[in-house]
Amino acid sequence: MASYIDIHGNNIPIVSSDPSNPITGEVWYNTTAGSLKGHLYLAAAWSTSGTVPQIVRGGGSGGTQTAAWLAGGLQYPGDTKNKTWTYNGSSWTAGNNIPANYFIGGSTGPDAAGLLFDGIGSYGPGTATYEWDGTNWTTSGAIPAIGPGGNSYTSGAGTQTAAFAIGGIGDPPPARVDRVLDYNGASWTSGESTPLTTAGTASDGPTTATWIGGGDGGPGMSGKSFEYNGASWTASGDIGTALPQGLSAQGWGPQTAAIIGGGTSSAPTATVAQIYDGTSWSTTASMTVKRQNNAYSSQSAGTQTGWIAGGYESSGNTDATEEYQSAGPGTVSITAS
Image (cartoon, rainbow, N blue to C red; front, side, top):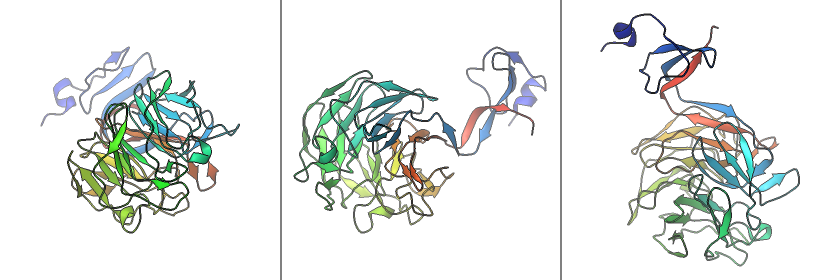
């Protein structure tokens, strides 16, 4: 197979903008950026991005690496629980507030069509559902409560018009459930229960191709993952013991290209991340910060590329944002070292 040099020679083109469809191995000098660039095959890696303006722990979130939202949670300073932030791939900007407080409930959806539901009752309504249009939040149909005070550590998947609320813990805890509720854009109805009880499990995908993995649902769930095909749940690849046990595993991506990591910030393995190819899980690059109760991507039609932000790490709450880039061709600046 011919390389870029075989085809084009050793001359480095000088351009004012990056090529729209570069070839792997291609190198050019970008006069606007003032840097030598290349389209190379890159190893999987996490990188630091813009910090959230407030420390946020237990907020809801969704969207991709270049267009996302984060809302609610314990927010410091000020101890607020209803603020919204939007992300453009490099920085966070304040948006309009949620109608009420929200903490460690469920969420899903892209940047201009997000869905937020549940949350511990003592920090908010506990059974509320809110829809985000990219600018404002509106209240939708209430979600049935697991316990007298509402629900927490529920996982979300799907879209604003076809979503799942998966598992969770009743308030007061500690009961975990195998409940799945279906959302049609207006109201919630009972769906197909998961094979094991779940709480704080990672999840993503449309309601016809959802996956769940890890978390703290009871015996065995921390190392397991399951897939849903629109009618029933089946066991999929075994995540194993590399990931820490506990609540708030984070993950995103479709059934054929998912990623999962974190869960208990005090565990020695709390930076470990694993990727899924539709058959089995394997270890990928580790996160730079140990995290739990953080916000993260929700992009059921996307890839393993995504972001995580905020949460609780071993030394306290954090405002840090990290982005994950899966292995493959990518454009980078080339520097001498």
